[in-house]
Figure 1 (cartoon, one colour):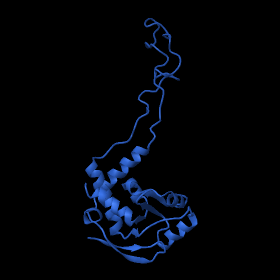
Figure 2 (figure 1 turned 45 degrees about the vertical axis):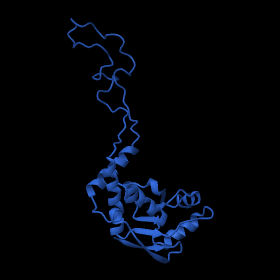
Figure 3 (figure 1 turned 180 degrees about the vertical axis):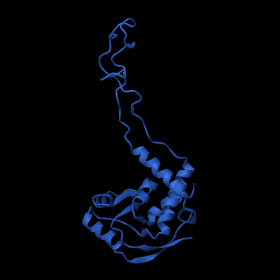
Figure 4 (figure 1 turned 90 degrees about the horizontal axis):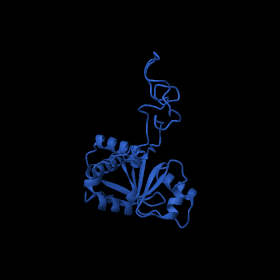
Length: 208
C-alpha cells in the first residue's frame, strides 16, 4: 500500500498515512481519464446556439409567382433556405451536450486520477485545515509552505472560513470530498487533501 507523509499547516511533517491500495494504487487508465474529462467539459457547454429555420423567419406568406408558365423554377415561399433572408437549413439548435459515464467506470476514472497524483508525488496530505476566520493571505502562506501554491484543496466537510480563504487565490480551487471529479483533479498540478477528506473518499470509492 502506498504511504505518504502527513503535514501540519506550518509545513512540518507530523507523521505518515497508509493509503487504500484499491483507490490510490490502481493501474492508471488513460482512456477512462480522457473520457471523464470530455464528459465533464461537455456538461459545462451551454448549448444555447440557435439559427432560424424557415418556420421562424418573417415573410413568405404568399407564393412569389404562379406555379407554371413563367419560365422560372417553381417556388412556394420566400422563406426557402435557398433565398436571401430565408431560413437556415440544418443549422445548430439548442441542445444538451452532456453525457453520463456508467457509475463504475466513472469511479474507476477518479481512482486513476488519484493514483496518478500519488505516483507523481503531487499528493499533499494535511492532518487538518482550519481557519478561525477567512484569511486569504494566511492560506496562501500555508499552501506556499506545502510547496503547493496552485492546487486543488479538498476538505472533508464544507468549511466556510476555509473556502473563503482559498477561493480568491489564483490557481487554487477549494472543494469538499464529495465534489471531486477527474477534471478538477487533473487540471491542478498539486492535490492537497486533509486526512478527513481522504477517509471520506476511501469510504465512498471503497464501496465501488
